[in-house]
Length: 168
Length: 207
Image 1 (cartoon, rainbow over the protein chains, first blue to last red):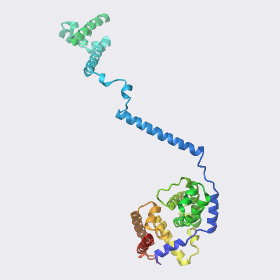
Image 2: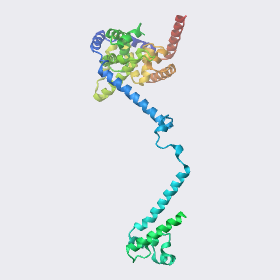
Image 3: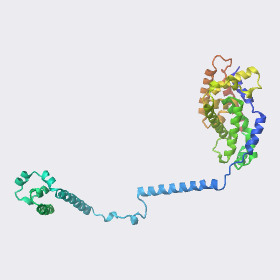
Image 4: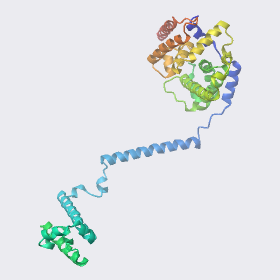
């Protein structure tokens, strides 16, 4: 027998009329879900809100990225035209100076014992005949036997001198 | 396609049960056959067909015409229902525990014995094909859909349908094997001849 003919026979297969009738009545007796009202309205409103918020945020970020907002010049905290590059350079130099000063202050603030360990005594005694005039902050701790007051005074002098030299 | 289908669909979308009833009357036998070939028994086919139309009725308000015929929407629901059916069945029974007689399909009981046996062989072979192949075999050879109609109903291109059809027939041949007395030499030739005559018919009608 030909397969084509057999397949054609399947078209003669029909559902049982009693099943068809029963199924049809049962299906059409089922009420459709309510499509209007709050249950349908709320998700619709929420959807619109979501879409609106998404569009507004996207627009905001695009403007932020491109920097093409017309009122940005009024809202900006710093006007770029005011900034002087030379002044900025000078400020940068000053910041560097502060860092150096902070480095200078570090041994001064440290404990005398630690400072003693950090600075080898014989070398400093021999290498610094002018004593406190040395730029090195370690010069402040050349005499560990003296009191704290003395060491503080000598370090102050050395700092001042260092600053003077730097300013020159 | 049903006469005045668009009108019936619009009315059904608005909740008109009698309009949906007309759609049910027209498409129910097709969906039933589609399901019956894919599942084991008449009872299963009836249950799934009922579920398909119940689901369609409950969701018809969301139906939007996107260029495909209404039947493609129904076939899509049917495909999903069959998948769900097999998924749930897998958890319920093992094939080893079921009597083979259970699978005899009373839906084809009115055919003579030799035809019934041949149909059962073919149906068993079709059920072993991939779902896509099954769909194309059903559409093209059982429902007599043209390439264009099958493509629209299955949401594929005509070229894809042709390719699937060729592969499906090849696989069906190998599944039926040499043990059967069924011949399939002329299957594709006959379908092509039918397609050509259909095209000629359409051309004549357009003139």
